[in-house]
Image (cartoon, rainbow, N blue to C red; front, side, top):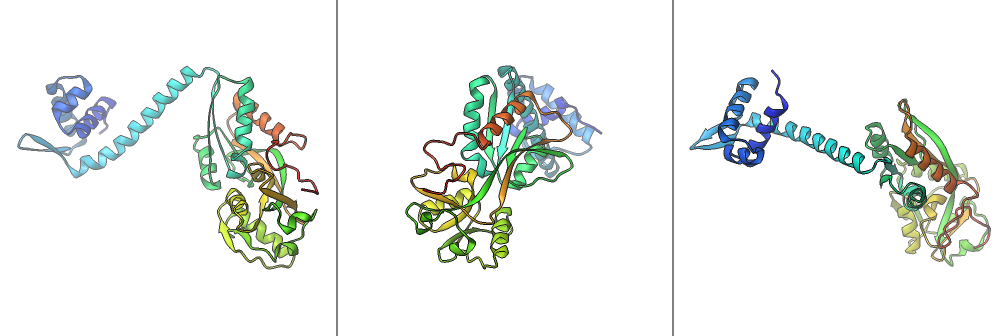
Length: 312
């Protein structure tokens, strides 16, 4: 037993409209044609799809279960149609990008702006995601390229280094720690500390830094990402350890960063499917990212510097 696409289409039309007449209008066919095909479909599946009570159709429990699967099929068909339309309208290509919040807040928009200077007819889509969904998007081909600070070890994914940045201490402008060129973990202890859940990658790195220094971290507030931490710091909640990529999103006049002895060096990586060649537009976008993340790349004039100087 198997249903063809026409039978599925008629079944969905009846379920959607609730009647034979509604389905016939939706499909631009006669009512007898819909009735015949629906009867044939029921004979094909071997059970009733509708109960006919006083001239009206009522879906059976089996039909309702089948309809949920049919909707998944139609959603997929709609995605195919949308993609076909986009491929026709954007002959130079389509690039779907995802990234972690740290690089997604500022660096990806900067890269998109620079990329479009030479590729104005390429359509780009972008969203930033947590680590797990980010990896899933690439594995399931919902994204062509992912950019993340976290290590990726998956047999079906390939990573390439884009750039590196330090973990630094962010504090409000005018904070006493801003007067020091370099900080130690011990210097952070007297101040309210914005931390991360220890189950997250950033939380583990911060915890390891404190442990290596023989100190105990006491969190005043826990947040989900370095971007959240920067917002807390800017609001005056406390100080935080963040990556330099995240700092670029914030105005230097409101946020001061200082290097911390023993802090991790973070590596930004491009992630893409291992067994498929990277598209031409993906390669070009990756090169733009490398240029922006290179030590010689120009930092935004109204933002915190990527490579932190000793003085404010």
